[in-house]
Length: 599
Image 1 (cartoon, rainbow, N blue to C red):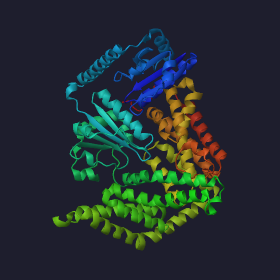
Image 2: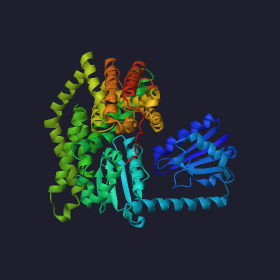
Image 3: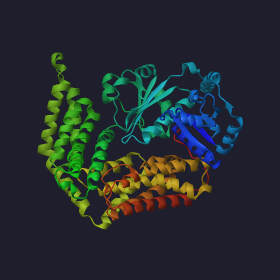
Image 4: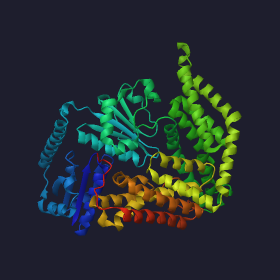
């Protein structure tokens, strides 16, 4: 039987995903042919063709009470609608009940469903408000922005957690994600104007000028992900109004927020990362024609190398420095930062020189902006003439006469050491980087190791990056493996989370292991660190070199992106087995794993 299954949870990506996967599996066990339409805050309605709609014999809608899930498409079809919560405990029974109770949907029924949805949502919100001792009409609305350096996992998981927590508390909550593809679900001016509080859960600097005059609470994506309810309550109680100046990047530090040099560095890395990924993959593609093919002028291999190595990799240090300075001083910092970064590149000072140039340019521009007072008649020239000129001059002269030469020597020594170190030193470095990648699953230690590997790519040092990415895949893969080989020790929701974790691990998203670490940190984190250390050590021992800093296992599909693909894959498998089997042995028994939205 052909069946269309719709799962809908506007703010719950994980709920929609898990329900869709479980219902699909249960449907196939009944020899049905399911077509899945998974909808959430981050997914849009699947466009069904006329042929697909005509072939459907049954439509099953597992939706949260807050959506009617586009029922207009299914008028004239047999349809069953039920809350998504009913689908998760026993999907087989849910499908059997749906088949038995489905009725032909008529156009007039949609209005009844919409009215029921509205009444249910209103009753739910009112109940939550009453429990909190207030009236839903007086509940303040909340808007939020989430952003992390890579903009892949933490960004969206934190957004989901805040949305779910806001709904549970009865507060209308809208979240904008500053992900790897830019802003999604962007906040409108009307939503910002109506909001009582703005939550900026960001590990990188985002433009906050549109929130000037609003009460703003700053925190990290990790805090918002792990403690979303506390984050919202703290924001409502402690958020402070930001002036235009403070919104320009000089707001006060608040609990849970990573401020200062760490955040500025991550902002630079975030903007540099796409440049490194594109450049590295372009270089790898040039190697498809042969390792030395790019040396022949006029060939496609030479053109690809010119784009990747001759352009993208040359720009990565100026971009790193420019956006470190931007994080510190806003737009006036970009020009001196990029000039300083370019000088660092041309002086062979590498990524260390770029970091120094970025901080030097940023604080120079910030000092000029804050402390240099000019007559009102020429004050307007400061951001477009005086700050760029003076800050660029200061940064450039310091880089040329003070910083450039010694840092270039340091980078040359570091590069020589990494290239010439023996097996024992390589293994020790691999153990250190691998353990760091698995210690906090996307937190400060993880990102410090990752930034180190990415920075070395500019010096054509590729081995640490290989160890870092391989080890970063181990936690999520290991948790997925453990939930499979020791099924009796894992509750059903944990096993489903394990499947999602395994997929995320293949994509180099360590955060797939967070639900397990949140529930059982004293066992999960050591198991992950041991597996990551094994993988990092093996990667360095076999001399693996990786040209692209992201992509996970799928990078292996690009010829020559990794120099020893089979042995590299073996290193990942070895660490995954250590983590998966190790955790399966030490886990105490079935427990309910917490999702990202749990409060």
